[in-house]
Length: 196
Image (cartoon, rainbow, N blue to C red; front, side):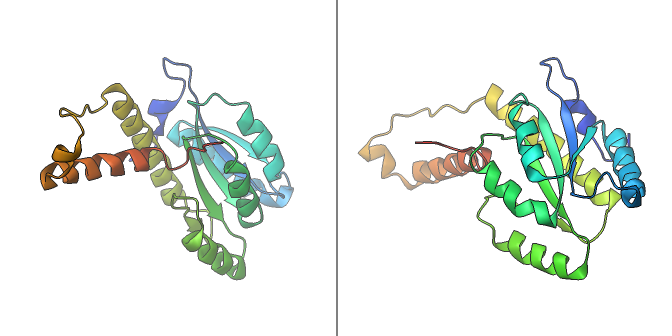
């Protein structure tokens, strides 16, 4: 495993959850991209992730629908697939998915960066001008840490020790503590989709 890459703690854990690296790129199976596929396979192996690839977002979204909700996914998507993937994710509940966009030209890097800076997803989407092993290792490590933090939060929920009524809510100290807890809940549920 590469230094600083701790994603392998997620792979095939006691609960049967798995960790994946997914490359979504229309030309992923072309011989011209064999070296990029080899590099991604190496990164995935070093980080303890299982690598798969999909040519189009529709195939990826169908595959995602078949996963267990506890599985973890690091998605490396081509710019052409990024927007339809994000749109498709809005209709799905998959909390352990991290995405980065890999571009093929300066123009696509510019457009992808502008889009990523203004998208309404609630989670940062890094944009890469080229395949960067260090950044993907860091993303896998951050992904593992986020999952560990989320699991720890589920195991040890904080309990409000005082009743909520008008007199307790007028206390600035209690309001500040509630604001901190509310922010934690918001951050934990950023990618959860709620359907009416």
